[in-house]
Amino acid sequence: MVSKNVTIVNAEGMHMRPAGMIAKLAKEHPDTEVTMKANGKDIKAKAIMQIMAAGIKKGTDVEIIANGGNEQAVLDEFVAMFEDGFGE
Amino acid sequence: MTTFKGKGVYGAIALGKISVFKRKEASVKRVHVDDIEAEKARLAAAKEESARQLSEIYEKALKEVGEANAQIFEIHMMMIEDDDYNESIQNIIETQSVNAEYAVAVTAENFAEMFASMDDAYMQARSADVKDISNRIIRNLAADDVDSGESDEKVIICADDLAPSETVLLDKDKVLAFVTAFGSSNSHTAILARNMNIPAIIGAGEDFLKAIHDGDFAGVDGYTGEIFIKPDDETTSRLKKKKKEDEDKKRLLQELKGKENVTLDGTKINIFANIGGVDHIGAVLANDAGGIGLFRSEFLYLESSDYPTEEQQFAAYKKVLESMAGKKVIIRTLDIGADKQVDYFNLDKEENPALGYRAIRICLTRPDIFKTQLRALYRASAFGNLGIMFPMITSVSELEKIKAICEEVKAELKADGVAFSDDVELGIMIETPAAAVISDRLAPMVDFFSVGTNDLTQYTLACDRQNSKLEEFVDTHHEAILRLIEMSAKNAHEHGAWIGICGELGADTTLTEAFLRMGIDELSVSPTFVLKVRDAVRNIDLSK
Image (tube, rainbow over all chains, first blue to last red; front, side, top):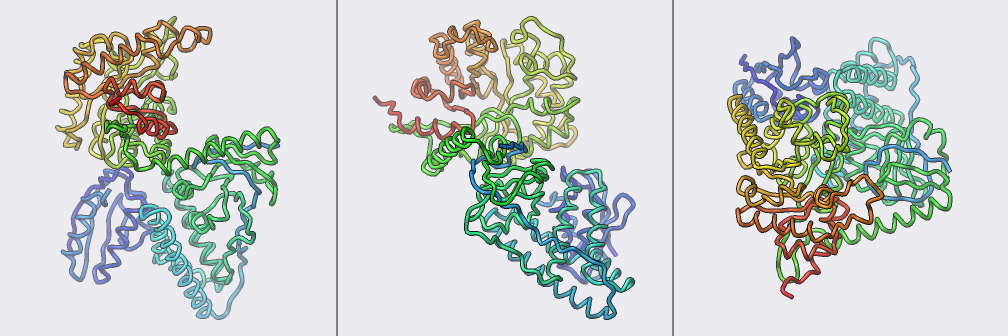
């Protein structure tokens, strides 16, 4: 299991588009279970509704945890996407 | 005649018959089922069909409104596949031995409620998305065909609200306009409508729904947000006239769109647009303006009941800059006072407000307000091509103070590690005779001038703009004004600055040639005049 902390940089937080991107990436790696810890909640990366419902705002610290499969590479991909502000 | 007013989300005029949008609102009944496996299989088939339909809608939207706006349907597809959503449906079927329709409806209700209870308007609007995908599954369970317009006649579609997928699926060859009782300009429907160029009004109110009947004649004015049911003759002929003008303008747009603002002898000029709110960006792009020459930031203050925060301002500025995709956007700092009053500023009543405590004078004496705005502007500068313009300048020392505050703001941002652009152009309004007369001193300190002809006229001719009795004394073509502009242009160019005109005179095509001869580099006009001015420029020959 590997993990890393990131901070949400998007002005509008993790709204629909980022949520879609996270869920999409998670589904591309079915062997690795990716979870995000934010505001004391565990959120599954492939669960788009959970991500949207978490309403994570700008400036929130999120711990990304990857477990199984090619976990380090998958984690790096997620971290890069967060740090890039989901291309916004 | 009955009139309703909502918010126009796309400006155009339509006259025609009303068609009340009928949704196959599959009424869901709770039914006991014995064969749970069969029910699950039925659900799986309906889900598969829903995903297929959504992918079709996505492809259609991709062609019609582009990837950014089509993405919603890709997300809808993912929502249909969501584990929590599906587990909830399956659970209800299994534990309660009920039909799939009921299980989907209950799940939709729960998820929609969860979004609706969030303290975020954007997320609240997402409950409509959950309902949209759920209704699709329910319709497919009932094996209902989606109705696609029975009549061949073009109609005005009227509805309570339209889901994004419903808007895209409308056969646009048969739609004249659409009007909804509810909905927000934040909704995907509004965004899609704008992109599809369908005259549209949202939020016409609940009473509107009671007043409409299939086949009634109606007029829709997407510019004012009005819908006239059974309009009287006068209204009908007025709308017909407006419709024709609108169409002529749009034809001109087709002819002139993408063409350069260049005179017959090859002199090029920028034609930008003046706007006073984020909502007007659509008009700027639709009229093919090369940039925004004057973005009045007052709306942020006027629409607010307290000082707008840095974050609120940043979000608005960023949106404008991003929407303009690298084209120049000149934002004018706060110009409150005179005819624009805001309660929470607690400004005193003045005998001569036009000559009073306003604009930059407020900013320089209350630097906290000014710095909040400048911080938001510089932060937004990382997202596009920003110019900042200061109003009501009369002296060199004012400009020195402003530039010092700008440097302070930039240093603070740098210390905070916040990104901003190094290429932000700074400019001033030339709207006082003083500024024009000392333009040789001001020009070396700025990147550009922008002439505000309305105030420049009022101050030069000593004629109050608000006093209608003075009309015969207000000669907007007065030689004194033209000389002040010419002098400012000469001084700007001598010191490597550029000069534009953002007042009403900029759109006066009887003066376009004179302005070009003075060397004016940019004319910034109301979006609807951009093409008229482009047309004028393209017919001028400066070599004669």
